[in-house]
Length: 107
Length: 118
Figure 1 (cartoon, each protein chain N blue to C red):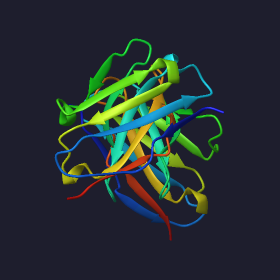
Figure 2 (figure 1 turned 45 degrees about the horizontal axis):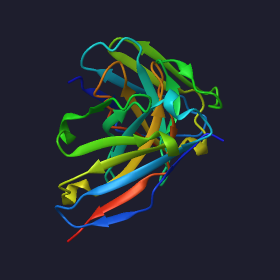
Figure 3 (figure 1 turned 45 degrees about the vertical axis):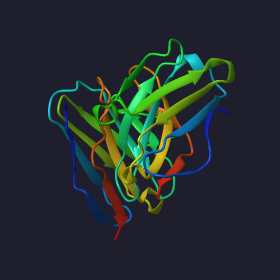
Figure 4 (figure 1 turned 60 degrees about the vertical axis):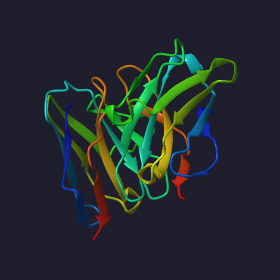
């Protein structure tokens, strides 16, 4: 099965900072990659699908890029409400594997 | 509005089985796959499998093969996830989520806590 590896596993940044999270697939998955945000005690929320398409209602400071095996999620200006754990997920075929998650905190 | 509402928390003994329901509303139930994802306390997300409501087709993660069954009742727009031979490491929050081909999981249930304890 294809493995999804996220880095870093956690990060701490200041309000207003640009934050980038990477997700690598062990084999090519075209652009069938989604990003989710999960806040404590809540269900995950879809942010981005097909690697770079912003889900309706998601702030434009979030963006995604990549294809094949390398993907990034960028928050252009980190806000306090962005504190959460972020997960990537492949969905080119089953199993729909998630990355291990990246916990984002405010410095 | 579009929502998935899951059944309440469960406490089960090792070796028992659990059935979690996921009732869809606000959209055409048969137009979206229902996926099940679980999360142990402090851990990441684990995909369990999917079910296509329009024809009942299912696909399960290898870790759950032989122990999980996903079904649906179209008359009540409800999906079900049945997990048997429960172990302590099945203690987790179980989520259902809808998904269309080529897109991510855009609507999630609120989660159902399943606790396995003797």
